[in-house]
Amino acid sequence: MRKKICIIDLELLSIEGDGFHLMVGAKIGRNKVRLLVDTGASKSVFDKERLSDILGIEDFENMEQLSTGLGTSTMQSQMTEVRTFSIGSIKIKNSQVVVMDLSHVNESYAALGDKGIDGVLGSDFLEYHNAVIYYKKPRLKLYY
Image 1 (cartoon, rainbow, N blue to C red):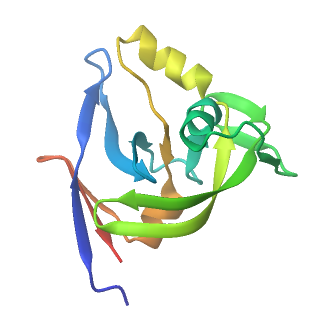
Image 2: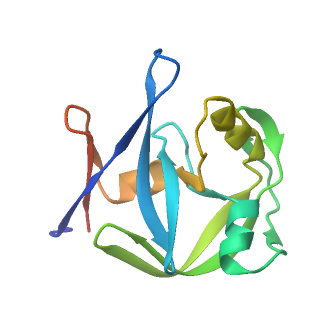
């Protein structure tokens, strides 16, 4: 049983007065990243272009299966290793991560005047860390 607790402030992004999205800050190595907290996403993914800039690599390993969701029917996904992923006091080393083209998502955010996201923190990570989302004072509680 995990005994340590990590509490992280969330950013609430208003979506045209019709709801909001939850954003959380994290790090890949020493680089700050902004992730959409998406309980409906089965997997956590990172944007191919933004991760390429952070890691300084252009070629990622293709995955055999296509991915669905994120406003598309199906699309090619890839994988790569991230040496260090940190969120709050949680540090994960040598992690395999899923990489996808999230440009269509970032175009939607740009239309709202927002800077966009570097990735999606999905239910795989949230479930593993027994995540609790507090909406009144937007925070994310994780156990590790």
